[in-house]
Image (cartoon, rainbow, N blue to C red):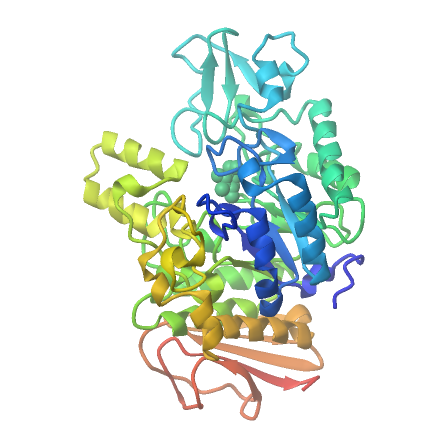
Length: 541
Ligand code: NOJ
């Protein structure tokens, strides 16, 4: 068992992300809830994860599924009550699982009492909790765009002012230059630490130090100063694990974020690898250039080694399902899901599994009117207004919409995939009769057991944590091969990231290595479609 009071325990950990609305309903209202999560803790213990990153469960009008918080100290009633949250924390802890809460510190909901007060007048003490600029109706302060479409400025006629929002209109940005705002947020975080929460994921943390007059959102000049202050005041215990969402991070920035002195955060989610298969916007998909992906991972692995810490992920609630995106969700769904996992889990960093990834859940073929996600709905309206054909818009949404990851968790082959006895809030993927937890648990060759084994291997062999990364075959269009080495141990990871068989000769020194894990039976000189193998020499056998 990991000693979670010590700084750095998370270097040997694996985390699991839960998107509460779609995980498990317990009361038949069609929405996932906290008692539902509690009922699945044994499943997560069996998988072997050390913590749950819980997407927001706090009170919210749900314009952005909880990333629009109206009360930082109350649970959204359909998810349960505070005592359910307390029970989740203690039941998880009993199983060695930490709760990592999602902190949305960049913005609140427009229903938050601070914003309701702020609207009352320029003299109201809460007015300066948000970012306001003077302006005439119809002429915003500048042309900045919100991430979910439209202007980043919203006019309030009663005040004769605009407020700034980087996301939906209903998500006004907080003013981090106001020390009272920062203090309120630190107090709130301590409230949750005192309830037993052991870590935090920090939503769009690189955007807090915005300077809209200079059109700066991410990486504002005061960003790291604010993060260090946040860390010193709120993340006091050395065992608290923190992961910041930082779309703007390059390796240099990530080294600051995850500096080994613990002055900022434990690690960040960076998205360089995630953006390699798009042309203009995320909606404009292009095929994944494998050599670029390999070079990208190589750079992150080498530059952060000893100087920072990586997070490792291919999915989350904002991304499509990776088996549909970079794997093959038809003929080789199981093989490619395992291959992608092996490709990632041999690397240095802390892995995050997104709910359903461990059973190889796929994208969902919805129609244009079925989408729920505010970003997708806005994109559909914008692209229609710009004259894009519906067929093209639908292809983008099916490939890229966040809703691909938000269909209910597929637990079994019964109606609604065992997610709810009521009417699910969102479409269940039709393929649930074949792809579900119950059948995965009954099949020793399932994707689930592959993940379970990878997690166990990462705990058993120190080389997964400490080994130095070397990329082999950098230009190969199909193979992703690398080693991780320490003085005592050597690991070789071989992945055929294609549906074609490929000849491959194991490099010198690994001819007699033990096969730790593989996704095909037997060994041959030819790598079969999506075949993955991890080979090991030395250390603890
Ligand atoms: C990032 C979150 O992951 C996403 O779901 C959300 O919409 C935005 N931040 C705004 O909070």
